[in-house]
Length: 281
Image (cartoon, rainbow, N blue to C red):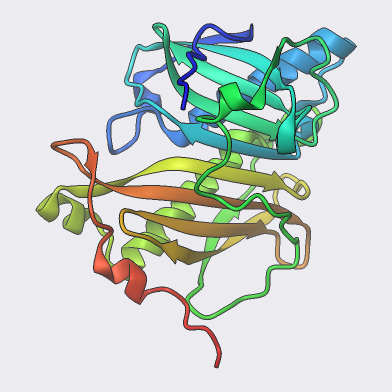
């Protein structure tokens, strides 16, 4: 298969950098800030094309793949293009580039702009298109099931809402990160386990589907469940909602178990598979 260099493709739509306080317990740029940058690029693009910033709701579905770790002080440019053909034809593809290397990509669907962007054929984007996460539509009705963790994630503050009243992308993923931490710790992926074994986990792909927006003061809850465990990867799905109120978002993350010394994937811990929900007979 031909490998395509995507680092110089597309049109710049955002320039930013990695701040030290934005790095996570693995010491690299947290997922929420990759997503925030992609969101800002989409708003920038919409404003450029329409003269109006539609805010958080500019993207209905965002599918991110991670290609390279970024550390504090790294410069980041988001370059944007449209997918020219195939199943995702017409979608916007954002390319996060740092020092000439591709760091992450974001496929954005349900988006009403992008006509001004250059077009890239889908075969050139093969490394950026969804791989570890199903792209089927998700339902806002997500009933509780066996193996779920239900978590209270606190009230929405006014500072978490943008100029249109939409919940900020980074605050959706902040709550997902909290749900993930508790979900995985409950089944054995504790900080002590990571410290003793040197085996952590890193998100390699995620998909976020927005359903609706809470209001300032609403209490956000999450249901979280492990839905797949492979040799080295595992997937966790999260549903954010307001009790007796709107569904907020459904997010799926694909993780790889990683040896922190070698920075290479290793066998997923056995307790993850043991925590999978048991199908009814």
